[in-house]
Length: 134
Image (cartoon, rainbow, N blue to C red; front, side, top):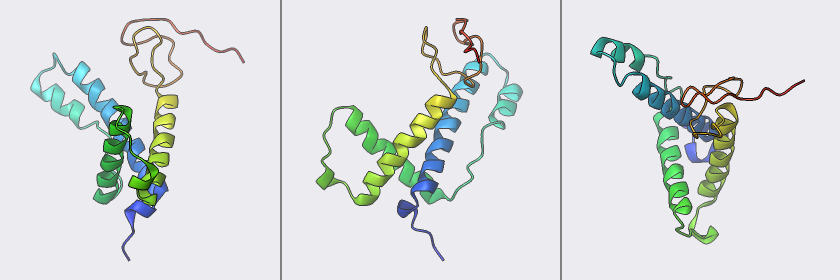
């Protein structure tokens, strides 16, 4: 039995979260591995999160990211130009992005995404973060 990927919004959301996490990890590896030798860089590459879903989920997620990029660039896409599956997918994209941004908040000083939301200092610029009191 085949799964209609574009109808599985939860699976698409999971694929989008994986894409965001993978891109985040890739950026960290690029920063850390800029001065590394080939063996160290290869070891860092092996730490990238694996893709856990079927290929079709990532293809549809990439399509949604493209639609979102067009909208963010100011290209108007009317509701009558989207399929119901694309509209539901864009909602899943919004949810996935909010989850990612909550897990990796941006530094208020330099904008670099943090490894998690519990850090005390930005690894990019060294800014100190205030800790919320319980």
